[in-house]
Length: 64
Length: 243
Image (cartoon, rainbow over all chains, first blue to last red; front, side, top):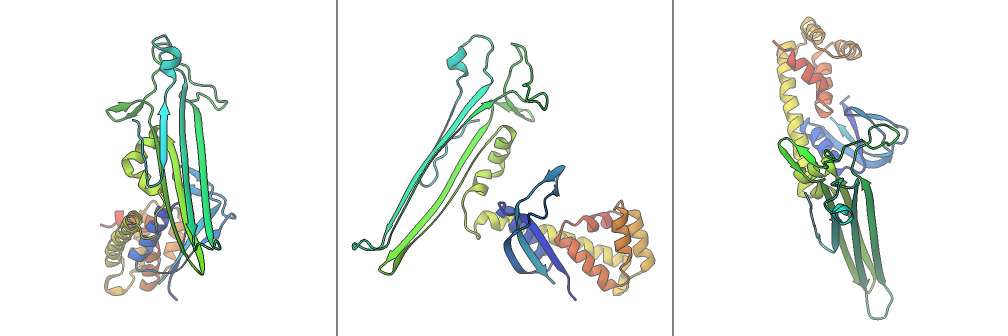
């Protein structure tokens, strides 16, 4: 079974989404799904030196 | 640093300081306030035919203003930092450069409309922000205005970010190959070398335990591929300890 990578980025940061897609493709993964999704359940993500709360995110799934 | 930017439709940005008006040359030399405002208007009218059936009209008017204290808080209660008459100096500093309090505003808009006898369509989007102080200077230097502006998914800027991500991942894959060449020559995992290399790293114990559970080349290769697509933390830690 191949590897699956799920990346969640800030919905309001298209630059983060683009970079995440690039990282997946650069590592040889094929993007099979991407969408906006409600991830309110993930209420605190370590972000740099502190914690940042994201309401909704952009979900990108890569498969290999 | 002050900016006046007009982009696409209409954007008027003004900033002014009332310090001089209020106090002139009297002390203190500055008041503790910056007033900053933007005013935005646009309109779009799409009509399909003269019979009056399909028609789209969009109007938008926005005004916003900020009355912002310039002195930083000295405590969590919002008490402003104190200063004497001689040292109340509001300025931004970056290395050897200094300027007055930095403010940056940007407005981006994109609209389109189509209409025929079967109907009318209109699309539009707005992006607007303003930033002050260090954030304003960083955004000005790093092209923040381009970033926040409304842009299609295939815009040149997003391509740059995607390419940056690809390059970082490719760099990690290159280091992954170095690691595999060391611990899995001829595509056969040397378990002792693999675990020894893991022990040399400063990864957390949970990471180390998980990595040691991989017992063959394919498992290790796949785990490092995932790391290359994520943040490269494991690859970086292992690669630093290669002899």
